[in-house]
Image 1 (cartoon, rainbow, N blue to C red):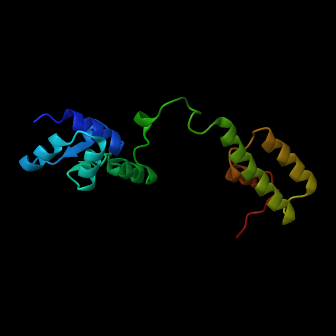
Image 2: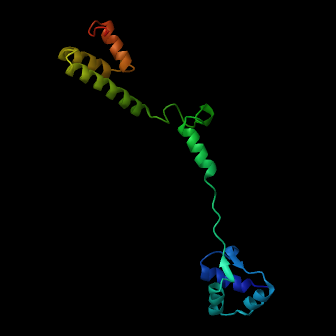
Image 3: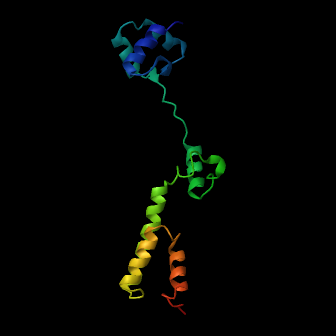
Length: 153
């Protein structure tokens, strides 16, 4: 039985595509549907649930969620996964900002604790600004080597 017209009108009324329209496949109901020629007839069939629309099919996010969990653990981040240059993932400016803030924070704490003088603070501050130290540990090591910080027991 050809129900193309009914399917098209149903799609308009249900606000979906023709392929999402479900029409009851029982013979006696198909007969009733084929007799429906006006929009009101088809509206009535929709109310009676002889014509419905299929639920939308979505793409499952299960695999994506699993991959995200793995990435949170540090997996799937190897060389083969990376795109872009050396500084694409963490820009060099951001790396610098993180490092210099840590160094300045350390120097500020040392000055407040009176473990370095104002002039020593200034000297090491400028050296940090010049990019001499790689990390807090490197800065503290140099302060110890220079005899400014004493070994703590």
